[in-house]
Amino acid sequence: MAEYDLTQKLIPHLDRHLAIPLLNHLTDIAIFPAEQLAKAQYDLVKGTNMVDYVEQLHEQAKPDESRDFEKLRQEATARYQELQEKAQPVMKVIEDPDAVAKLRSGVDKDKNLDLLRSEYNIDIDQINALYHFGQYQYTLGAYAPAANFLYHFLIFSPSLDLNISAHWGKLSSNILSGEWEAALVEIKDLRDAIDNPHGTSMAKPLAQLQARTWLLHWSLFVFFNLGEGQGCQGLLEMFLSPAYLNTIQTSCPHLLRYLVAAAIISRRAPKPAGTRGNRDHVKELTKIVSMEEYQYSDPVTGFLKDLFVDFDLNQAQKRLSVAESVVRSDFFLSGFADEFVENARWLISEVFCRIHRRIDIGELSKTLNLSNEEGEKWIVNLIRDSRMGVEAKIDLKENMLHITRPHATPTATLIETTRGLAFRSQAIQFAMQSSAGDSRGERGERGERGGRGGRGGRPRGGAPAREEVTA
Image (cartoon, rainbow, N blue to C red; front, side, top):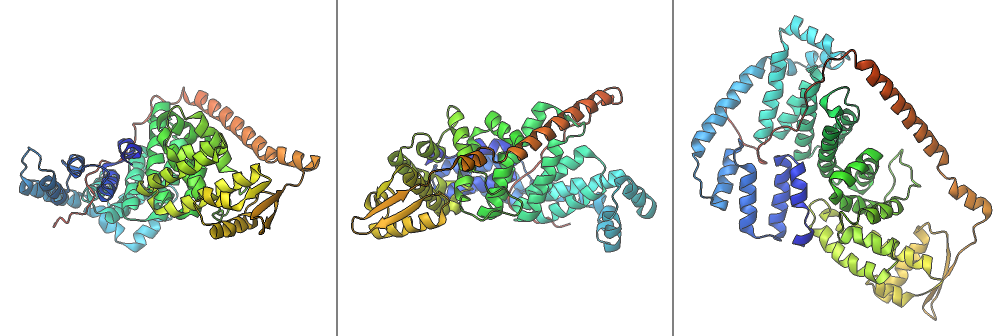
């Protein structure tokens, strides 16, 4: 499975803290030599503040270089105490529930800043000290405290650039501490900041493309930990939106694996509230996979092409056995392997029933790698639960399944053809109005602004495990 592993393609778009679990997963499944993985882990975390963890990996990797870890510990402790002292005035405000409630209720950050100056004698530099201390907590692996400090910094800070960086840091902290609902909120906030940059450097197309690429990769941790309903459906909604689908096709086509897997896994999952249930993600993704095959293909995406483009059921079944191994060894998909195989079999069965009028139950069971008895139960459940619009009868004497398809009336054909026309028209009208408004805004701002703000980037980070530093 090493040839289908995506770790080397994912890591360049992740913070180093987020990359450590991926390398640990590779160590567990042992598809690469242990010596190479130990060296990769050490190269990833060396030079960070996680001194104990770096020392542990140094002993495992046994590189040629020698390091004074005691000196590194002393430097890390001194830096921690320095940043803690600078952030102490703001931390006292955070620990006061009345002060936090008063500041949190304020809509205008300028008024909050005036309140901090007048009542607590806190200026903007001390607020920024809270950001730097939260960031340092993150580099020590104290993800929950880091998320807390960055959350309060976002309440106080008026700086767009530091706020964007704080959002990235808080997202990573929430992911690494397992706060998935809070991480989902951060994804929505970052998505809004990227799509509406308000004159920052992210308004430049290349910077916006890079930020969207990061967000797509970071969001994998969140969506695949929220389950097949909320998580996979949320992934499909975000990844298939025009801007992010364009990003995938342009800079990271390997993410098509997760798009296809999410569509198959959530095929029969209950739809979250507010989701359009009649959208056929599998049909939509079949076109995308065929279009992008020249850039990226693997057994997961190939399964979809075999089934819905070539209609080669035997090849699809062979591909599914390989795809199952790929999914079981994938860091994000391994927990959904059974659901993936189950729903992939349903797709094969549905296609089989759509293109045949008489089906040998034994042949279909063999295609699905099931016994004859299991195949009968499978077909009964398929006809009962699927939405194929067919009538089926099982002939137990001949062990055959007879399919009857009702003929579509002209009225039904017209309704199916025009389904969603009103929604698409409204979407086009909204896009045109937004484009026209943005053009007018840009023309009006050219004479008013002399320059644009700096770029907000990912938080700088260290290593994955928490280090305790005594103050």
